[in-house]
Length: 149
Image 1 (cartoon, helix red, strand yellow):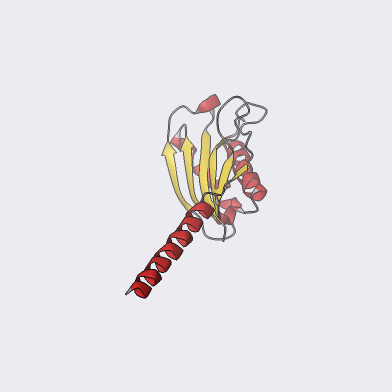
Image 2: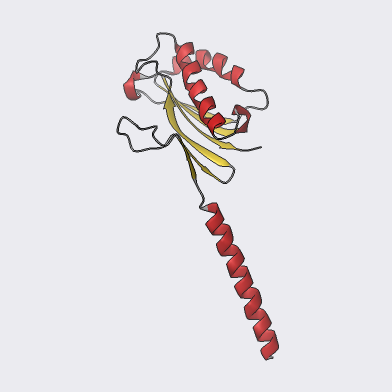
């Protein structure tokens, strides 16, 4: 009886140690562009845990101003997303979810014309949200989640 009890306790302790190691491993984080909020905003450009990258909302400004052309602004913000992914060793094809906030949904077609050119495989899941006024009067703000393929 005592031998079975010791075996049970040993198995339970081993399971507990394994689970603890799994949780501790999941807590490892890498901050990509940790000074993204250098204007005083308290955020990092992206945070990676394991093979998942969480990308903060990004704008497509040029020298702090909104470009005159919505397509150029879309290129700028997608280039910023792409640069963040590359800094994390990923590509646009690693994106699994993209959320676009747009100040005026009449820019939907212009955005999509540019967006399509950034992917070589399947498109990620996505939301395009009419959000009203965005910071700095931007037309687009994008946040995303990527998982390494």
